[in-house]
Image (tube, rainbow, N blue to C red; front, top):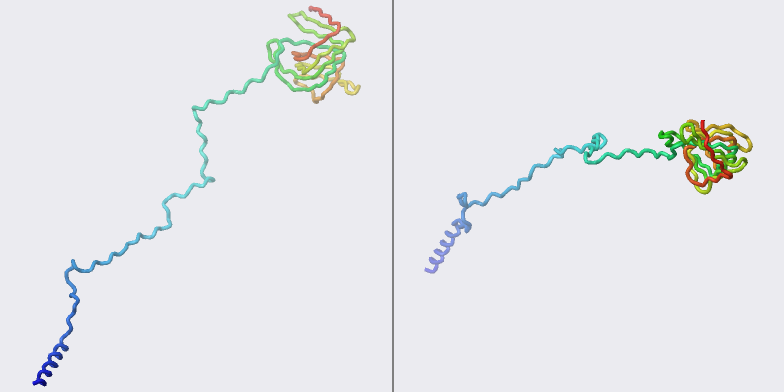
Length: 227
C-alpha cells in the first residue's frame, strides 16, 4: 500500500515537471495606446553657411568723401579791414645842407592822405634827426607858401623818442664814408638797404607828415611868399 502511494507521488511530480513554466510577465499588449512611447529625436538646425548676406564694408580709399554742406545759418566771414591811411593833409618840403638820421628804420611803402587823395609814400622811423641850414615850406593856399628858415649855419633837431616820417620823395647825396652817392628815393624807387644811421647832403625831402619828437629851430624866421 505504501509502495502504491509512492509511485503515485512520483507520477504527479513527473507530470508537473513536463508542463511548460508559466510566465509571470504580462504579454505584450496590442493596444497602441499602451505601447511604449516612440523616443523623440532631436532635430538640429542645418549648418550655417559661411556666405553672409551683409554687404562688405566700403573701403575708405574707394568711396569719395562728400563735400561739407554749407550751413546757411553760419554767417560769412567779414571782409578784411582796409589798410590804415597815414594822416597828413598837405605836402611840405624840407631842404638842408646836411641831414643826419639816427636810429633809422625803413618801414616800407604805406598809404597817406594828401590834399584829399591817397598816395603811396615811404615810411621811416628814427630816434633823432639833425638838420643843418633848415628851410621848411608848405603851400597854405593856391600860390601862397609859408616858409620857416633856421639861422644860417645852425643845426635844428627833432628829438627825443620815436619819430615817424612819411616821405613822398627824398633826393640828395648819400654820404657814405665821405663818398657822396646821388639818390632819389620814392615809392616807385624805395631805398635798397635798411641801415641804422645815415647822412645826406644837399638834400630835398618832400614829406606828408612827421609824428613824434619836438622840432627845435634856432633863430627861426617865418615868412609868407606868393607867386
